[in-house]
Image (cartoon, rainbow, N blue to C red; front, side, top):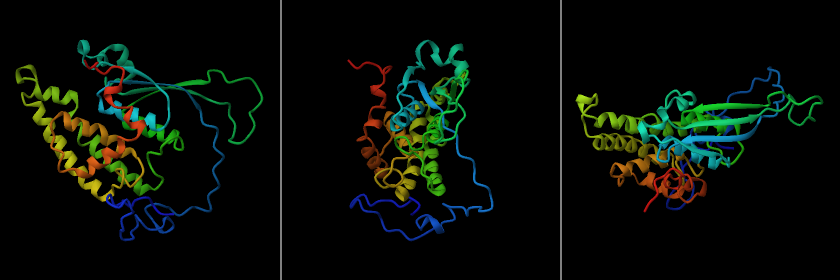
Length: 298
C-alpha cells in the first residue's frame, strides 16, 4: 500500500513517474504516513454505535462561496438537507437579524443545524439492550464555518459517499494546504464585507478604493500560488485522481475570479481540474444558479 500522493499525467492519464520519497514509498516504511504501534498499550474498547441523522438544515446564500462548499460536501456525502436561504442584501441583510444571530454570532453563512438521534448505550455488533427507550434521544447541533462543517461531516461519516480527506497524514496535509490557500489566504480578502468596505467612501468610514481592482489583485495573487501547488499534486483532480476537500474549495473561487475579470490563462491546471469536476452531478447541482434563492433569469 502506498501513500496516495502521486499525480497523473494529464496527456496519457497514466500515473507520472516520480522518485521514491517518504511521500510515495510504501506506507510500511513511510514515517509521514505511519507511526509505530504501541504494542504494550491495551486495545481500545469497541466503539459505541454512532448517532443517526434525523434532519439537516443548511442556512445559506446562493452566491456565498462558503455555502457553496458545504452544499457540494453534503451532495458528495449523499446527505439530503433542507436549504434555508439567508438573504445577505435585502433590508440590510437577514443575517443581521437577532433571530439569526442566535444561530450564528458571526452573522454570516453558512450555518448547519443537524438533528441527531442517539441510540441506547451498546457496542457495535451487540444486540439492543433491554429496557425503556432513552429520554430526549434527539440532539440538535449547530455548526458554523464551512471548513469546520465539512470536516465534521467527514469525521462523522468518513465511509459515506466520497471520502474528502485520505487516511495518510501527509496527503491530508497537502490537501489542506491547497484548500487553505483559498479559504484562508484568498477568499477572505475578496468576500462581500471586505470589498464593500474597500469601495465605501472615506467620509463614510470606508477606504474609498476600487472594490473590483482590489478583488482582482488578491484573487490573482492567490490563484497564481495555487496553480504552482496544483502542478505538483494534481491528476484528474487537485490531488491525484480522487476528489478531495481541495476540489470543493477550488470551484467557488474560480467562479469569483470570473466575476472580477481575473485572467485565468496562466492557470491551465486549475482550469483542467475544474472541467473534470463540472462533470460530477453532486458538484454541478450545487451551483449558485440552481439554488432556490438565486435571482430568476428573464
